[in-house]
Structure formats: C-alpha cells, structure tokens
Amino acid sequence: MTHIIPWLRRARRGDRAVSRTDYAGAVYGSLLAASVIAASSTAGKFPRFETVVLLLVTGLVFWVAHVYARLAGERSVGRRIDWPQVRDVGRVEWSITEAAVLPAAVVAVSPLLGLGLTATGWLALAVAVAQQVAWAYLGALHASASRRSAALEAAVNLVLGLVIVAAKAGLSH
Image (cartoon, rainbow, N blue to C red; front, side):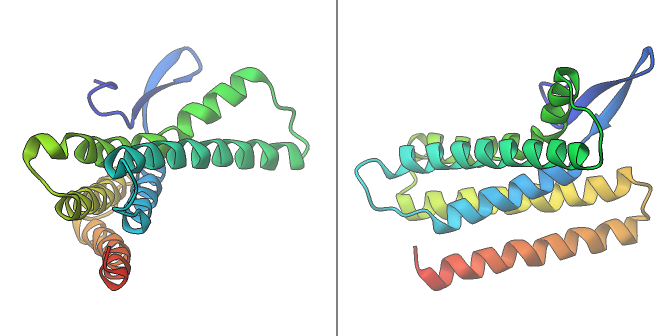
C-alpha cells in the first residue's frame, strides 16, 4: 500500500510498526510543484523535459534542505545525530519530493494526450493544486479535525494554490 499511496509510511515505534502519513510534507511539496510549474517557461529546445527535470530536481533540493534543517535543529539543541536518525528524517521528509511526481508525470505524458505546451502547463498546475488541497483535507481529518475544520483547511490551501494560478496567469506563461 505504501507504494500505491506514497505518503503512507511504516514507522517503527518500539517493536511494532505504526502507520505514518506526512501530510504537511505532501502539502508543502504540492505547493512547491505548483510554484515551479507556474514559473517554468515554454521556451527552450525541450520545454516538457526541462519542466519535468526542474520539478524533480527542485523537489529533491528542497527535500535535502528540509532534512538538513531538521537535523541541524536537533544538533543545535545538543542532540547527537546518527545515521538511523538521518535515514528516518529523510523518510519523513520524502513526501516533499514525491509531491512533484504526479505533476511531472502529467507533463511527461501530455504529448500522448495531444496537449500543447500551454494546456500541459495548466493541467499540471491544476493537478498540483488539487493534490495540495486533497492532502490538506486528509491531513486535517487524520489529525482528528472536524469535517468543517478540514474543509476550511482545504479552502485555505485552495486560496494559496489560486494565488499561484493568478501569478501564472499574470505572467502569461
């Protein structure tokens, strides 16, 4: 199941495995992917390929930055860092990178769907915003929020996504 829905994780607590879902990283990664798509250009020799690479590389760079920041924070309060902890933090933060995969896949398969560059950009942006809203909603529900609170959280994330959509529209990419 963890490979079908990439944000589902198995973490170890004592001797038993427990489910762990990193909704915050998924939301953040989706917002990041939407930003990359909005800022990417349709110029260049291979704009689709460049957008896919940019999405994946940006996701990886931000993942490394988040892992480093969490570990540096642990170290700054006097905690010793070991390799199992580095691996665990890397797993927890991995959803930031995974959130770029679906929008990148949309861009990659868009020629098979007969989409032009402009339509591809808008579809990939819609996918990134939709997954951002969905993960925010699911994360709130998972944190025992009421459906109303979860809907409010989804609405806030929709507004954030629409700000990026407006920026893309304003830049007329």
